[in-house]
Image 1 (cartoon, one colour):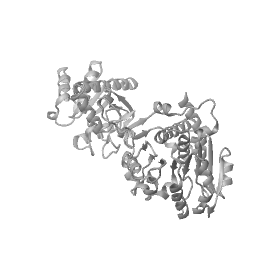
Image 2 (cartoon, helix red, strand yellow):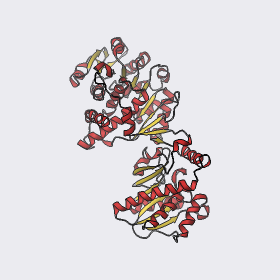
Image 3 (cartoon, rainbow, N blue to C red):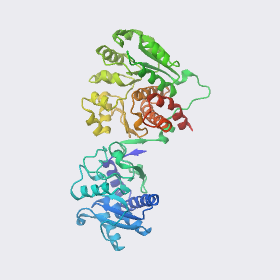
Image 4 (cartoon, one colour):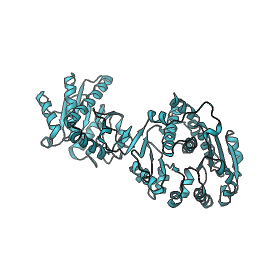
Length: 506
């Protein structure tokens, strides 16, 4: 599903009205009716028959006026109030306020328990709510009553998901046209509740306005999942070479290998320091292993000598899990990136080694996929984790552009971005599968293996990255459903990959 920023949705509205001939009042009518339907459904679940709408003076308030009329005519007890100067209400919103008043419904304060409708600010606002709006938001939060938000909860930045001040916590958010990034990215997503997307009677693709990214779901995943021919053999599904491991860090490359195998790779080889190789071989007998020369338990420059044959046989290379952050390991990683002609997936200590060496990555002719968590992304961009988390979409775009790669910024609301060197509509993707139980050591190593596996099976790099993030999150949710969140470990995610792929293949 496409995702639109505030500016893109505003332009779509303009084109729909001015060029496609759809009156703005019709769009507002459809939006308010969509809100009313969700409010009625929520009333049915809560046994509340009264509704109180808090309306601003812009179009978001106008949607609220329409919703109030539909609810009134359906037999619900309706009250509403206007926050701000009513004299500022104009256009379609004023038309609908006048209709509401003609039905005998004047603004008044709430009396008694009711479902609340947040029609205060919408997508056009920025910065922290102030004055009467901020006070109204505090009262909504304090009431403990169920809330339906119109387009976006007031106080959430629709584009970034940041929450600079007071914010409404909604049970349901009804958003119009396309979902907004801030409803899917944290912390905004935590305040949106269940997100309902209503097209409000339009095929928005007809406006011709490009969107910024897409929300990746089951439909997209099922289309992307590669089908396996009946006469296939293991060579048909690629050979993933995983390079990593160090003394005390044998688990990371083992988990990456398990992730690759459980997501369908035909062959997997782990190249690791000689002292680590027996441990990895015992951990995962389905994978082949290659012992490499080492320097005090880590890979070093001389380790490259033992890699030539493995690189020649492989389809895809994954670099970094458990590699270590010693100077010799970092030098090895940079040398490997420079010499590897295969599609390359970089994670963990491989990313740490390449920070500040953008030219090495940009000069590669084969695609590169980088899979940082927020701290690693901050290191790669020369900033701090808080800055990355304040606008994850922007950070992932910067990373992809700076290093000329496909970036997978892991976390709640995983963001996958193309470099703008290969521009296309929806060059960013948001994946919302997954759960807090996946915040455990080794989870990212499993993802590295899944990305490598899907690349080896022939998916285009960007699609492989998006599908990998989705499958990884789905596997985490399947594991959570079996074991709960608190005790989830990375091995549970790896073992649930087969179930996730089975669900997609049905």
